Image (tube, rainbow over all chains, first blue to last red; front, side, top):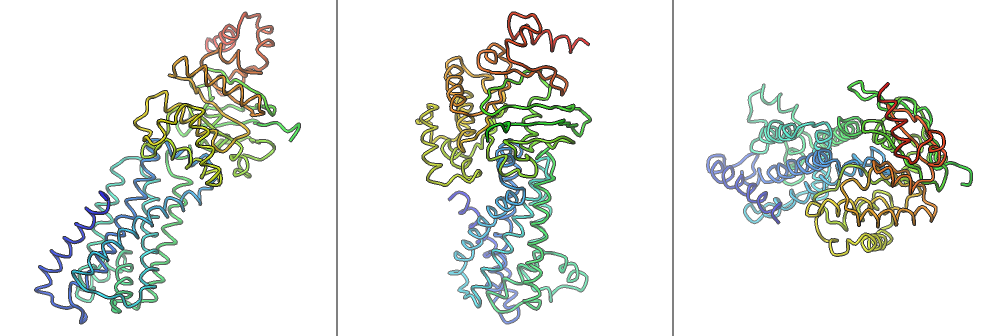
Length: 232
Length: 248
């Protein structure tokens, strides 16, 4: 409970502050009421943050206190170990994203256009960022490295990932920069699955999310087998 | 498996990234069902040797076989046969005692039902029944040792590595541990023990290997070693071999 409730409160704050305060000025984006427009992105923000935090801390703590040795000396391969940590974070991300989405619905009243696609995107996005968490947890040698990932990389990227606006509203330079933000693709794909609208063509976007997940997991695998202070 | 040694280590070398040569061509064969003591000063390479067998340390060169299985190429089979009670406490502080045991069994592919039964048996055996639902960070040092010992046995290993298992343990627990270890050994389990308690090694082990500076400097039964060095006990042997080496 103490993990889930504060997270949901934070997400509700986003809905209230951005949705209701800004929503009085931005009535609609692409014909969708602003609150509805931002809900999928806010759920995804929670999913992304939670999945990467869960796996990065799990790996880092296990490494710091050396109980990761128990896993490293077991008959599991490095691939299986990386997969286990990443799937643990994926589950946490999916649970949190779903909770935020469900709690948000009464405030917003949004329906889901394509539930299956939303599940696929949610799981893929969660897996991608959980894998990034696994990778960073395995590479980190100090606690600051983990907080760097959360507050200097993931947080800004979530805010700049098109959760609160359409990239069409941005000047050219910023729009171009957004295309290099992996979170943008997950937000855009989730929005398509929920509301049926998106900034980009949804299927290449889905491919992009898949590619990000594969690359991130390869990074996690490599980091678990080669990272510092694991096998020496 | 008759005739195949439980552990066959050949020409193992390991240099750490800071340039420290921890293993300098170690070769060691441990027969199936033997109880071998590995004695040597701090930094001699005992823990590195154990860690190299399970790839926690990555040796530079050399080979390791566990009951004929290559410890690096066939690591799944090899590691499944090994149980380790490490020198340093490494328990997941978020888990309860019972979870530590059942999770460990899971890492080794022990079916859930069997793991549960085995955990109960181990809790009983190590006097941990009352502590089973406590988180490991609330346990005393001696209790933590018991948990690590029980954990090492959860997957019924064929070879047990005990890396200074009685460091900081009270006399009563030491006696009960040794009683149990003897029993396991009689049941066919191969045991490799590192300890600083030389009289224990002498009493328990079929054979003793002395390691210093990353090399096995001598080995034999305690009677052989005492004869060879004209010593009254293993402690004297140790002082003659290791003491002499450290003064060279």
